[in-house]
Structure formats: structure tokens, C-alpha cells
Length: 215
Image (cartoon, rainbow, N blue to C red):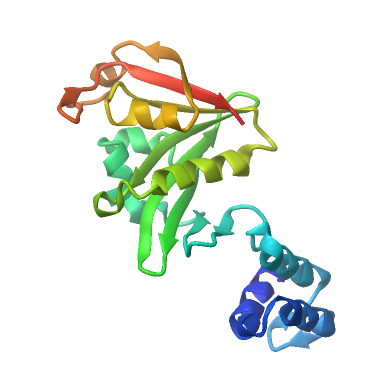
């Protein structure tokens, strides 16, 4: 109940300031108020969030100072097909990683702007399987925010963050700017595994290019 209670406490008391929010949690700790039980976890959640920890109820959620929030989607991932298809045009390929991966969406008060799906591969390696930003929201730094978030989210349990992408003039430079380096290629991946030619920025994608960085 700690995370749920903390969320409602913030809704009620956010206007009072950090110290009063934390004091209120401490005052009511151990008391059942409606359906909310104020516990030590409640207090810890609020303290972590309000003091800049950026998380509520553990891993998977983070609020940023610019009004952007990144949260994990655990159910109904397929409601974001429109975004998933921006990065991967074939449903059967998306289905191979969607359920076993963790999905994160980046949003603000106007709605979801981007998404990212990450899987754990071999020991110490996390892999970005799908990352996309709505066309009208691109070139505003949102994809980089997602990558930086993934680095922090997986930094304690993984040593390497990896991504596979087509040999595109749009994606390769982006990942290199984010600190990734090319490690290897899988020849003819797109022509062998997709049922139609894939083009990006006027270039047909043929090989899968894998890039990685230490996190």
C-alpha cells in the first residue's frame, strides 16, 4: 500500500511544500485513513520522490523537472501499437520481444510522446528493442531522455546497454551521439526476417547494426 498511499498523499498535500508533506506522512504513519494505511514505506516513498529521488513506489517511474515523466507500462502494452510501429514495421517481430521486455513511455500533461522497450539478454546486458517518438514530437530531445533513463534504470544490474538498428543515416548518428559504438553486424537481417522491404530516409535497410556502451 505504500506506493498507492504516497501517490494520494502527494495529490492532497503537494501544495504545502516538501517539509510539510514529509511531516504529514510521519504524523499519520501507522494510522488507517479510509483505505490508505500510512506506513514506513509510505514515508520513504514520499521522501525519496520529494527530495529528488524521482521515483514513486520503486523502479519504473520518474518525474523530471521539465514536466516530463517516464513511467513503466506493465499492462496493455499493445495500446501503443502506433508508436511501436514507428520503430519496427512488422507486428510478428514486435511480438517476439514485447511481452518479455519492459516498456516505458515518456509523457507530459498533454499525453504520451514516446516509448521504449528493453529486454535483459545475456548476463549483464540490456538491449533496447524498440524506441520511438511521435513524429510531431521529434527533434526535441525525448529519445535521448529515454536512453538516459534506461541507462540509469539498468545501470546497477547490467554492465552493457545494447541496441540493434538498421544502417540508417538517422539512427546510427543518434546512437553515436548518445555514446554508443558499433560492435558487430548481422548480414541481411532485414531482408531475411521481414516480409517486405524496409526503408528509412530513402535507404533500404539490409544489415542489422549492433551498437553498445558501458553503463
